[in-house]
Length: 244
Image (tube, rainbow, N blue to C red; front, side, top):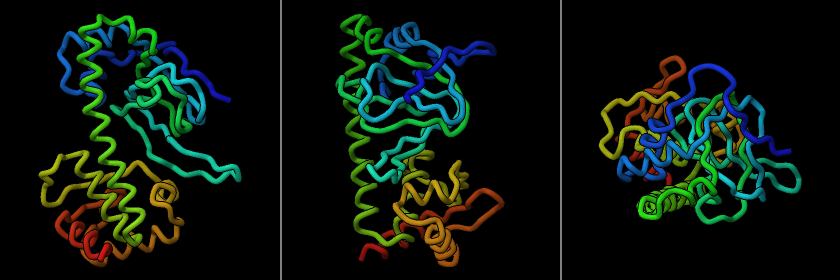
């Protein structure tokens, strides 16, 4: 059963204006638009295991996370789970159904407790028309970027072996953190278990563990406690070689 996010009962609530300015959905919009979004948003919190929405639910709002982690996934009729992605602080949830008024396309389940802000479709529609048009234009640019990222992800799954998929996953994650110009030895600390990583890559946990070892032996990564020290040039070479 879907459990609606609850308002924060205590503690310092996240700043809606800060969260909207840092969110990618309306990147590039003017400050007046972000101020309107902040004024229309509600703070919320969630607990581990809470279902924020399920596939097929009405897309009545969009979430921006301040803290915590939420898993977006699909369930087959046989109960098999396919993890699409994990959302963390600064990420957006439910933007597609929010923008086009359709049903939710996946299930969102909280992995940890956290909080953020929630904007209903009705509150968004009450924003001044000129500001709303600016926000929608920014959202279209965001959706185009997401489509390209999805194409890259599908290409990785369809055309590359598991070490190559893993190398490409690390590269995409690093580019999201640092942009296209990566530092020579970026440190990557994934908030994912090997089981969760296996679900994203469409493989088993033992195979992901072997692929990590292969990347390490090939010089693409080295382990430093819970972090990975990455060699972007080697990861690029390994990802390209696996697709040949």
